[in-house]
Amino acid sequence: MLETNLKQRIYNSYRNIRQVTNNPNNLQYRRSREKGYDIQDEFGSFRAFYNYVIKKLGPPPHINSVLMRKDQSQSYAPGNLMWGEKSEVGNHNPACIRIRYRGRTRTVSEWAREYGLDVSTVYARFYRGWSTKEMFRTPKQ
Image 1 (cartoon, rainbow, N blue to C red):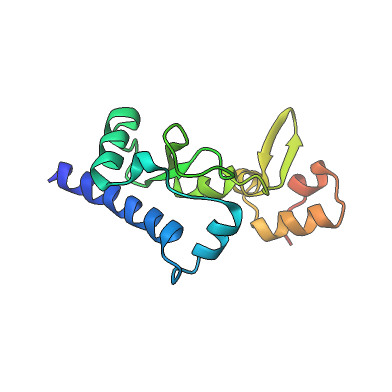
Image 2: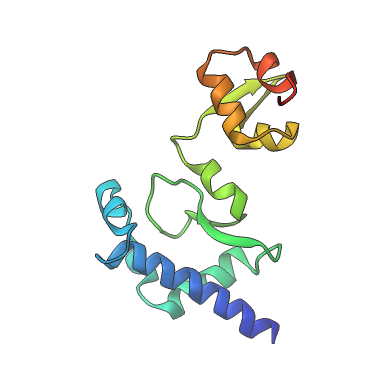
C-alpha cells in the first residue's frame, strides 16, 4: 500500500509538471514559457522521472513533503529537484523578500511564522519602512 501511495504521489507531481510546461490550457503554462521553465529530456517519461526520484531523492521525508525545484529560476531537471514542505515552495523563489535580523536571513513568511504574525502585517511594516526590531517585536494590533 505504501509503495502504491508513493508512486501515485510521484506520478501526481510528474503530471503537474507536464501540465505546467506542456499544456497551453494550463493557467501556469504561459508564465512557465515566459520564464523558460521546461521539463528536461531526462524526465521525458514517467518511468525515468520515477526512477530518478527514487534513486536520487528517496521517499519523501514527511507526509506533507512535495517535489519542488531547488532553484526556482531553473527548469525541472536532474539536480534541481528536492523534497520540501508545501510552505517552503515560495521561499525558493528568487523574488522573495529576505530580511536579515539577529544574524539570520529569512523570508517574510518565515519570520512571520516564527513571531506569530500575519504575513500581510510583516509586509505592510516592511513597506512602511519599519526597522526589523519594530517589524517583529511590535504586537499585532
